[in-house]
Amino acid sequence: MALAGGGARGIAHVGILKAIDEAGIKISMVTGTSAGAIVGAFYCSGIRPDEILGLVNDTKLIRYVRPAMSFSGLLKLETVISIFEKYIKDGTFEKLQIPLVVSATNLRTGQNALFDKGDLFPKVLASCAVPVIFKPIEIDGESYIDGGVLNNLPLEPLSGKCDIVLASSCNPIAKNYNVGNMRSLLERTFLLAINVNTQSKRNLCDLFMEPQELEGFGGGDFTKAKEIFDIGYRYGKSVIPEIEALL
Image 1 (cartoon, rainbow, N blue to C red):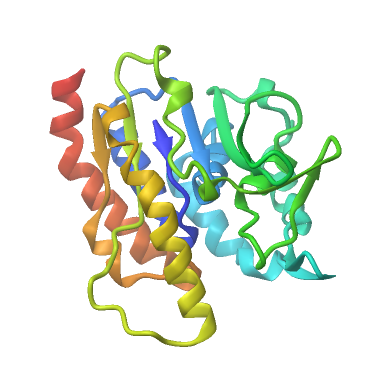
Image 2: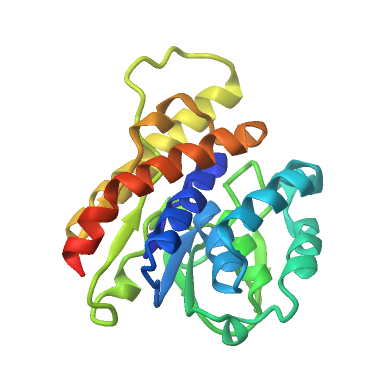
């Protein structure tokens, strides 16, 4: 299963995963970008969907984002590592219960990077480092930013390894957008850009899932986590017959 990036909208993945768990369907491998990488890390470590929603609400993730005081980004993500360390005790890909691959973008080479080995936390954070908003993450001397820039729905690692490939996207494009403030414009622009590389991947999966009810939510709507989770859960329940037909 591939989990796309989308900020707070990515909480819908958690609801979909709950519906899949309840149906007794086992996920054998997960890939993710940005919010999808975070959800994937928690899920693949054995934390159940209801618990993931609980920790999102309890930790109030936005409090852990601190000013970077840098010309390369306004905020820094490294302080979020304390959340990962609290809930995922052994922070390596190799110790996860389900194999995970996360997507990031190498700033120097301009190429998509797919991580599946070694230290988990910095690579998940690299996948989330939205350009300009967050300072790039340094890994082995290279600078990385959000994987959504080049590959928001990393389906390629699943090809040839899984019999059935599911894709969960959370970025339906609302048709009634009006230009707002700078933050709104930046988010809209990034959403349109990543949507292009997301939609182009649809032929690489057996089932593409994207709840249209998410149109009215922004990437920063973490205070609406339960509502977004419920949208994902309802949508997940509705597509279970399609997944079971594939199986």
